[in-house]
Image (cartoon, rainbow, N blue to C red; front, side, top):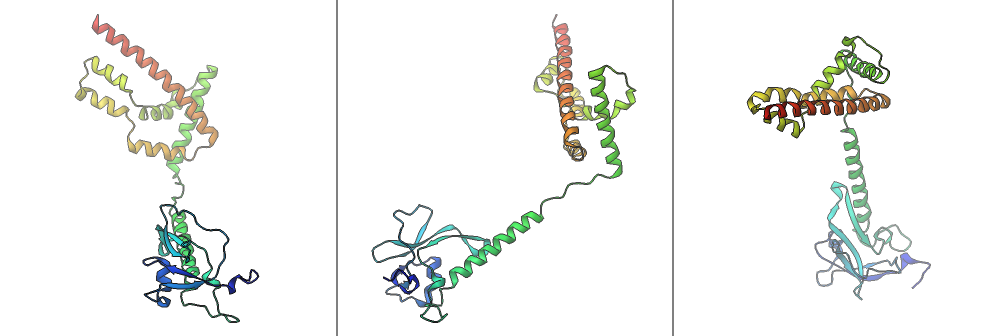
Amino acid sequence: MDYDNYDGHRHVVKVAENTPLHDWFKDSLEEDKMEILVNSYHHQGVNRLAQRFVPMAFAPDGLIEGFYDPDAFNPEEGKFIMGLQFHPERMRQDDTDKFDYPGCPTAYQEFVKAVIAYQKKLNSSTASVPRPLKLDQAMEKKRKNIVRSFFLARNIYTTGQRMNPSELQAGAEFLESNTALSLQQENRLKQMGATVRNAGSYIERLRMSEEREDLAKNVMGKMSVEQLSDLLSFYHMMGQICSEVLDRKLNGIVHGIGS
């Protein structure tokens, strides 16, 4: 073998039927032999093929010369997982650009087809990413009022400074519309004698509805990281306080009924 001229060396491989390699070279295969001559470009070989792969070609000594993954090979869909131990795109006749077989350039052509299809998929998925929602003037004004309301409430809590209650209305409404009862609190309502029917309107009013959740997300989407951090801290603190106070009140009522 001339190691300075890999492309000039050829050895026989037997092509397996019902494989992409067979489809590419079927016009050059004889039914009784199913063989082609290929150039040799390897000094290593596959000892044991992974279960997901299917052999496409064998050397006379049984060495696997080609394989592919049937579940991940579809150039039309951007899938192209296969391995070859030779380079069909370099199998040309001496001193010419003519291929040894008509199927030689197909491997490269199918690979390029898969790359283009995969790129189109990526472009399509990128184009489908929704753009950030833009708030109209009314929604933007409401967002600013809510942010200001929470900011003022935090100042009241930390400094004791008195504020006009009307300035806290937006934040109070936001908290009220986004407060849900815990399972324990619902059970205690039932212990007080509230039936599901009678308490239903009260519980429903406090539960977070999908519509209100979407509204809250739209509003918060325009807030800065610092504002969201402040809002989260304040909301968490207020939630704990509300839960503790409600818990004490419900406990007191239940104990009063039982005594």
